[in-house]
Structures are given as C-alpha cells and as structure tokens.
Length: 469
Image (cartoon, rainbow, N blue to C red; front, side):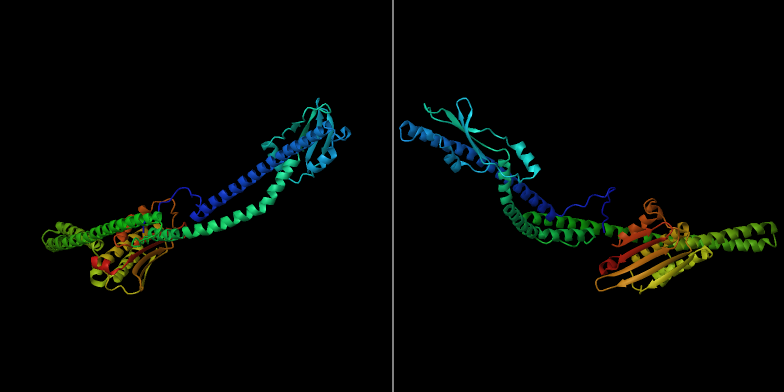
C-alpha cells in the first residue's frame, strides 16, 4: 500500500460535487428571485408614474372640451370647471390632482390619501435610494378668454413604495414555489448525472488502499470516460512498476541471504578449521611444555583460551549470518531458539516469550528468512531500548479462502516513545520495511509514552509469490 502524503495543516473538509453544484443552483435561483423582485418594483414604479401622466392628460382633455363648449354657448360658464365629476372618475389611492392658474396658484385640488405604509423600513430605504420622488406631471390647458392655466398630477411619496411592496408580496409565493420546484428538479437531475462519480471515488479509494489490480469501468459521459482511461493507465503502470520493484527487492534479499549462507559456510569450513587446528596445537604445546619448558606452558594455555574465545565468536557470527535451525527445524523452532538465547543473555531482567498460532510447514525459504531477520531486529530493539519486563513474540498464520497470510508481532510493556519525535528509521524499521515490501507485505509500529511498543509485520503467502521466492 502506498502511503498518502500528510500535510502539516489539516485542510478544511471540501464540499461534495453534488452539494457544490446545488449551492450554485440555489445561488442562481436566489439571484433570479432578486432580479424578478427588482423588475416587479421597477414595473410598479413606472406604472404609478404612468397613472399620474394619464390622469393629467384625461383631466386636461375634459377641461379643454368644457372650455370649447362654453365658447360655443353650449354650456354655462358657471359650471367651469366640472372638477368634482372629473376627480371622482380619475383619482385613485395616492393620486393627487391640481388645477393651477397662470401664476401657479391652486384653483382646485383633490387628493385621495394613501393607506398606512405596509412595507418594512428597510424596503422603504432601498426604494428611496433607487428611485427619485419624481415631480408632478403637468398638462397645459388650451388658451381661452375664460381661463388659462394647467393641470398637475402627482403621486404621494408613500404610495409608490407601498404599491411596489404589495406587488412584490403578491409575486413572492409564486416565485418561492417556482424556485423550490426548480431546485428540486435540478437536484434530482444533478444527482442522477453525478451518480457515476460515486463509482469513481470508490475506485480511487480502492487504489489508494493498494488494490492496484482494480480498474474503473467505462462511462457514458466523455469526461468521466477520459478520467477512467487515465486512472486505469496510471494504475496499470504503477502496478507493473511496483511488481518489478518487489521482484527486484525479492531477488536482492534472496541474493543477500545466499551470500550470507556462502560466507557462513566459508567461515565454518576455513576459519573454523584453522581455529580448531590452532587450539589443538596450543594444547599439544601446553602438554609438552609442562615437562620440558614450564615457562611456555602459560603462554600455550593463553593461546588455547584465545582460540576458544574466537571459536565462540565465530559460532555467534555464523548464527547471525545463517541460523542453522531454519534449515533443520523450520521457522518456529528457530524463533524459539532465538527467544531462548535472549532469555539467557537477559539474566532474568526481561522475560522473552513466544506464541505460535497455526501451522508453519511448507513456507518458502526466503519468507522464513525475512521473518527471522525482522524478529532479530525487533527483539534487539526491545532489549536495548524498551526497558521492558516482558517481551512477547507472536507468530500467526491466517489461512482463509480469500487470502493466506503470516503475521509476526513483537509486543513489549516497556517505556514506549512518542512517535511524533523520534525517527522510526533509528529503530531499524527501514530495513524491516524493505524486507517486507519485497514480498508485498506491510509493517507497522505503534507506541505511546509509558504504554509499550507493538511491531507488526504481515506477509501474504500467495502461491505465485511462494513459487517466485
């Protein structure tokens, strides 16, 4: 499994693609609502001002007609202006009419007051900022000896925003219902369109977990199909590269063990025999010197002791280079012998134990050596650094229908360490990682101050790997 890069800062949790698109749709719907509301307000303002213009023109035409009838003697001058009749048919809420003379004096005036403002204060402030109050609409009367002047019409300041708010309030339920329906339909369409991305994410997660044999399926969308092609190509390339790397590492480990075996054999056959000959000659000199040259006896004895010490060192070196128990007794017994040696060297200060779970016959030689080397390094670290009272080595084989793995765990009750500060490579984990990676396995170490350390290595025993090893 490839480790994912870690960031020093924890990034904010990103939005899903569906939610992101839906937020954009909702924002667009909100902007559409605001635009519709603004258009309604503008239309209401224009309608109010147009009403004032039409009212002024209507009153102007009727007064001009009345002046013409008076000039023709059809109507009495005393009836001019017929204001109450005109105002009653023209005026509406918030509209005011005035009949002005030439100097601007008010001859007649009528106004229908607007109701109390029903709009909120913020709407009134926005309306006043967006629209001017406007001036009165004036329509001059035709020149006449009877009367000269003009008609003026205007809207009360509170009437226009009040009417605009009422118009917008009437539209609001329809707009909200429309936006809600559009959002629901858009969400369903987007969810259906983006459903294949769930397959893409699931596939990427499987690849991130190290399942490099997985391939993304084909998609109908061209963009997703291109993503699938690129990801599958990258996965195939990475799988081939890792396979080559593991094969190279496996061959390197095998070559290393073969070289160690060859070196152990050479040391045993050549150096061991020479030390044995030196020891025999020293013993013979010591025996002869006791009679003929007593002064040489102590030197011969010292030479014999040195050769014996060198032979002990050679035996220890040969065991480290190639433990004979692996070839003769197998992995489990070799580990028991290793544990026994550590118990002898610890002199009771630390108790080393071994637990076996499962059967370990038929294991590839390279796998056995890999686990043995990891056990050597792990036990050495526990003995030197943990200050533990008990160290337990567990060797377990998990034979299941889908997989066959072997797991080696070394657990101690020592002082532990803070994994955030010391370098794991300082504990020899780098070499163990390389060995385990050569067989497609994984290794992990967990520790906490005052709570001991757990080292766990797992190697899959796939048939093809066993044959390759």
